[in-house]
Image (cartoon, rainbow over the protein chains, first blue to last red):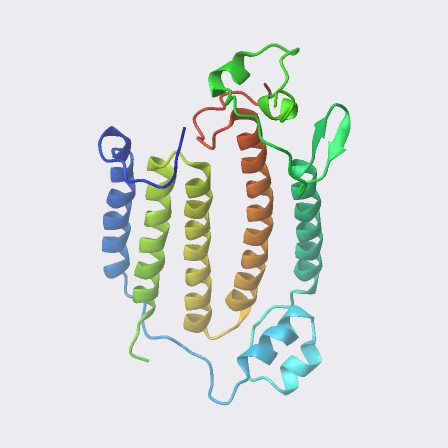
Length: 141
Length: 101
């Protein structure tokens, strides 16, 4: 059972060499690329309000107040992200729900925890009649 | 400006590789999730650095959306880890080997 974050040296670190190699290779490529100077934002531009204009499609305000060209409008993306966040909230609530004897239990309710910790392999190979370990929580106490 | 864009790229590359290292070596699902977050934030640094480099704000607005997507991903990921712990009494990512049990 995983107890917490601990540094395990040895064979498990071997795949991590891939990440180090990737860093070295991409770092060399980055250092050898001539990027040139930063364009930057013109002085006196309110970046935050410019972001707001771009996010809510205020193109008229963008063209008059701002002197930052070529920032695309993002209203549709904003609405899509709102829907995605809503779906994620629903998904997390569905995932957090569980049933005990047919009764749904909400995510924040607590029951006395059962002490018999089922090992993972038992649950993997268990048949359809085998209930998951958590659903009989508190029954044997 | 004295800080060139290549320094930002190197920073984000380092962050991405730390995240990749975590994904490749860790078995704890929570550490997995944190590593994925590091990789997402590396992409954010690149977006904002190149927005400044090109002189428009598209990258910055896009980084905001990426942060919202990361929040959605964490919500679903934590829910999955919760179910994982409930069914296996463990958050080791190598323990569940099938989609249903």
